[in-house]
Structure formats: C-alpha cells, structure tokens
Length: 469
Image 1: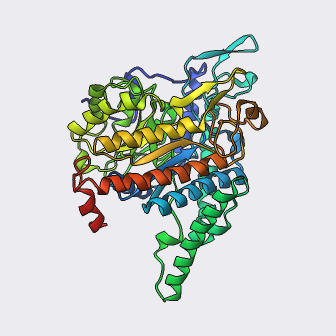
Image 2 (image 1 turned 90 degrees about the horizontal axis):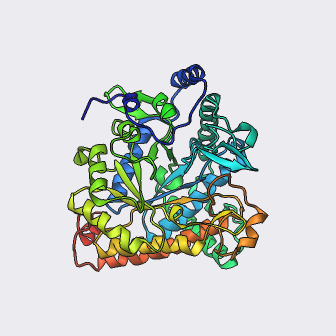
Image 3 (image 1 turned 180 degrees about the vertical axis):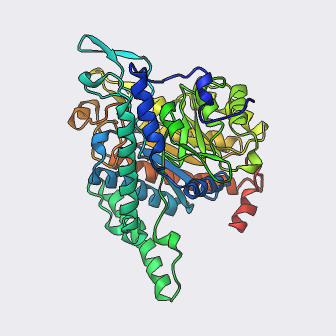
C-alpha cells in the first residue's frame, strides 16, 4: 500500500461528497475547523477500543443508537437528555437481563451528514439538491444549496452537544442509584414499567447493601461511560478533525467511533483510504451487496495487524429480516475462515425500511426484532455470537415506526412524524426492544454454554471463559 496521510484520500474517487460552488469558501471553513480544539480525548478512544475487544470476547455487549440524522435545532438540553436517558435505560435492562456489562455508543454530537441515493430530488415539481444533512445543506427548499459555512456550524453544534452530555453525566444522570427515578412516562405498558422499576430497585438495593457493609463502590457501578459515534461520510470535515498523537498514531478527534456506510465501502475509493490510517475503532456496514471475498479484503486493508489492535473493527450487518438466513452465513464463514476476530453487530433498521401509501418511510417493529432474532440464529448455528446492536432511535415520543407496544399503524404516523430522513424507534418501542433483546441474549448464552466447551470465533470455550470472568 502507498503511504498514508489524512489527505491521501483526495487521490481517489470519493462518493457521496457535496458539490460546493465556492471552493475558496470551502477551504477557509475547513482551515477554521482544523484549528479548532478536538472534541474527544485519545484516552477515551482507546478506552472504547478496549471495551469493544471485550465485546468480541463475550464479556460485554455493544448498544449503539441514536438519530438517523441529527439536526442543529435538536441541540437543546431536554432533547440531549432524552437521547442519553433512553440509552441508559436500555443498557440497564440488557445488563441486568443478560448479566453482561453494556457498552453505550451514541449516534450523537456529529451525525450531521447523510448519504443519498441521488444528488437531486423533486420538491413540489422543482428539482433541488438532495438534503444531505445539516452540516451540508438545509431541509427547507430555500436552503438546499450546499454551504461550507455549515461545516463550521456542525462542529460547534457537536461541541455543545458533547459538552452538555458530559455535564449531565457528571452531575449524576448516569448514577445507577437514581435508575428507579428515571422517567418512564412514554412507556404505556404498565407491566413493562413495573418490570423496569423492579430491575432498577434490585440493583440499587444491592448497591446500598454493599455500601452499608462498608465496602466502597467501584466508580464503574456508580456511573457509566458514554461514547459518541457518527458515519464518517463528509471527508473534508473528517480530515480536518484528524490529529497526530505524540506516539505517531493519527486519531479522528471528532468522535470515539466512526463507521463506513454501505454506499462508500469500495476498496479502491476514498473512504477506505481515509479510514485505513486512523487509530479509532471503526465500523463497516455490511449489506446485501457485500461479497465474502471482498469483505475479507476490506477488513484486511483496514486492519493489517489484528493481534495488535483487538476491538478495532465492528461489522454492522443490515440485510432485511427475510434475507438474513441466506445472505449472512457466507459472509460470516468467510470472516471466520480468514481468522479475523471482528465484532459482529446487527443494524436491523435499514434493511426493513418501507414506504407507506402516503409516501412516508417507516419500519415495522416486528421486522426490526425479527432481523435481530435471525442474526442470533445464524451466529448460533456457526458457533459465533452477536456482540452488539445498532438502532436508529430517539428518547422522544415520536410516531415514525409501526407496531410495538402501542401497536402503531400507518395512520398513526402523521401524529408525531419528526424525522427529516429515516424513521426511528420511539421511547416506548426502544424500551420494549431492550426487554425482548435481553430475553434473546439470555437464551443465546445458554446455547453457548451447552456447546460442550467448543470455542466460538477462535476464542476461549464458553465454559472456560465463564470461569475466568
């Protein structure tokens, strides 16, 4: 491979990039962002990499979730709190039910760029540039021209969001002893509210008992880490946020974790060139167009020395519920045979998107859940494991996905359809998903334990690993 630099991607074809009319203005804005302070610390990035390595080993489980596309207008205290709270509550259910610590990674503080199928779209009979996210252009037809100044605005909205997220966590929102008081107002199912309250109360009672006995609680039990992520789509911005550490490694300091989308993972294109040089843990979306040999080659290009960087690569599968059983096994087998200990996660959202008769995009709760279930089955059949999930969700009471505990129908979508891009699970649907997923993880753990000591993915046998944990 040729030598790498943060700008070496410019020598290759780059897909899904905005077309700016004023190149001088673009250069000025990128130079400004390059001089601004990093948003995350190197030690935080390395801490996440270590946690993801434990997800690969089955010692932790990854919960990644948040908006399909953040909006500048969502940079509000209550909105940010709701996003953090739903991930905390879901992770509490998963941790307690599956008896496995959960790693929380929020699609937060930077998810401002979106890939689109076409460069233009028709709006009220007028052909306009497609909306590509708030750091490129506006959703309003008057704001569709890509504006470099939005890159700078995106940085400052990211900075404000991540700063407030740290503030609310530091002030005690993430203190597990407060879990019984975390608001559940949007969960209409009384049985689920009671179930959650019972979990939270049992956890806090145990913590209080330990303290009463004079044992100082581990800080990990009192609070939690929250990491940030976004799709590394807008290469001008990502390059500007890439900084070299004293040890010579290059880190993207805009987020702890970045992923490569299904539309931009061509081996000989710009996104792979950029991503191969950063030390952050990274994800790769794996969809119906993925081919086994190409996937292996892609991982090897991005991760030439797996033993030296466990937790580096997460594969995020997105096939559609009805395609998992046929499309997933060949890819999983190819990665296993290549000896690549990646973290397998499931994105059950994107492959299950449909359009209503009124032209609104939606997703059905049962289809989303089915894709997760099908992934778990495939992993079990090949002595592998699902190490995480990746949801588009919100802590607000929106109506964008059908089904779930409220049994929303297509006619209900018009009540509170707020997304500008893809539909998200609402608060109640997200909590129900956590409970259902927890049940599956418990069952999956039992299957692995009954495997008579057979190793999974080239790791320790489950029985031996349980003793060491």
